[in-house]
Length: 192
Image 1 (cartoon, rainbow, N blue to C red):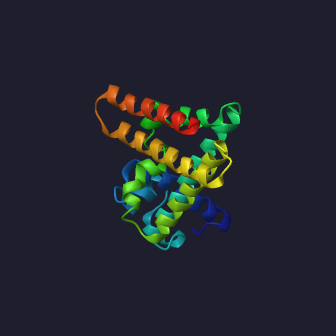
Image 2 (cartoon, rainbow, N blue to C red; image 1 turned 120 degrees about the horizontal axis):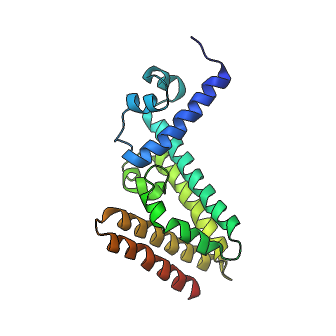
Image 3 (cartoon, rainbow, N blue to C red; image 1 turned 90 degrees about the vertical axis):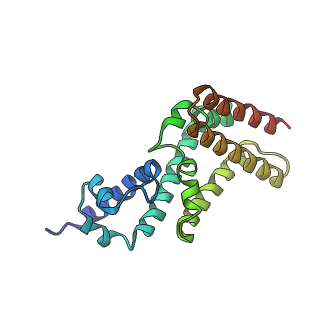
């Protein structure tokens, strides 16, 4: 049975959304096309009508995941205009975010996987990382654009590192300490 172009595009977007979440949960190599398409409610045969390759899907799903993360940052900022950086740190360096494997930060979930992926997938991540740095630069707006960008890069590195370390340890006190220490360090960095 043929589907309309509108339905085909809706199916394609659904596959990208599902892949975005499953890749964050299982890694790029942690799920096969059959299982991914099944999770999207489609057959594996439909995959090649929509995507050139799994790598093509990985790049598009990565872009979607990073756009979703940027939207979460914007939502936090809009909810707390009096302390936008505090709002971003509040949700990012939280136990709830740490525990969100499917919807959490794609940089944390897939960073080491991306290092082994194609330049297309890396470009998707690079675009999202640059967007995060730009947001942080605006939030800490210093007199020098270069100084703001450097601090923003340090803040993003600290946040990603803390969340990663918090996810990989068994000790809940140590996991929490990584998040809290990062938050304090970021405040000190901004104040300096």
